[in-house]
Amino acid sequence: MKQFALLAIFCTLGAQALPDRTPYIINGHQAPHQPYNAYVLYLNAGNSGFFGGGSIISDRHIITAAQNIQGFVTWQIGLGTNIFSLLNTLTTTTATPHPSFNPTTRANDIGIITLVNSLVFSSTIAPISLPALTETAQLPLENEEGSIVGFGFTTATSTAQAPYLMRSYQRVTTVTLCQQHYQITVPNQFCGQDTVGSSNICNGDIGAGFVTIVRGNAMLTGIASLMTSSCANTTPSGYTRIVPYRQWIQQITSV
Image 1 (tube, rainbow, N blue to C red):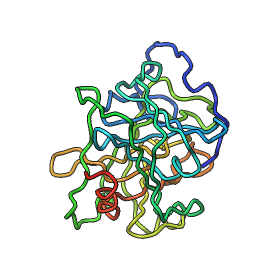
Image 2: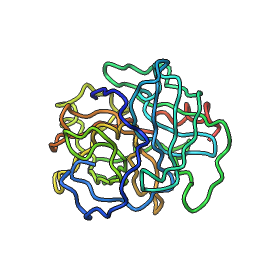
Image 3: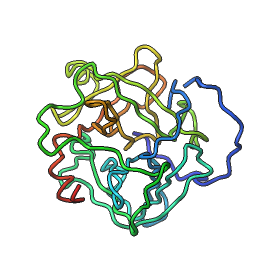
Image 4: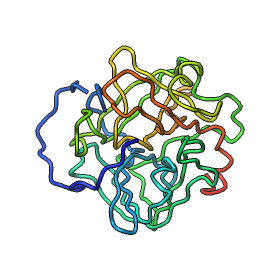
């Protein structure tokens, strides 16, 4: 993932409507509000950093990628709407990356941000389900479709957040295809790809949730972690699988 200097993070953006399909999440479409979605701005001691995504899993916890946590000291969380300029923001200085996170390979790329105060759940702010502690299936399954939402770049040359939440749909690829692009650990990581609409995650979407429908319910089964240097292609994106870390998540959050 490219790292960029912090650029006008909370600028005022116009409220003009976007078409349902833009040229590029990359090649995503404007998403309806997802109450679990969190915008994550992460800053180091020098007050510089970048932004990514996360998912609400309890009234005090946001799950995201460890790369959005390690080396940073402050996190600003945006919640409650699919319009960037209207996000409700709060700040915390407490976050926990997985202790075995490898920033080179992105192994164990998962972490928890802890909020200062408890969220009040409503129709616009609500947690997403996690796999059961006893789940044995390595969700998501190969060829299963998942959705990813984020305020990340909408073109390979963008330098600012998307004004509206964007969504991509990807299918889980084979392990063999994933390993052609990334040094992954199986089953802890998997890849997703959209060969139909050519959508893809981009800078600013790392940490966003990969959500699948499990037994009729929306469930967080992955976290965006790996992407190529240029987003404008159909190269698979890499994700951290939730199931192998379910016990660790419970230890940190009691969820």
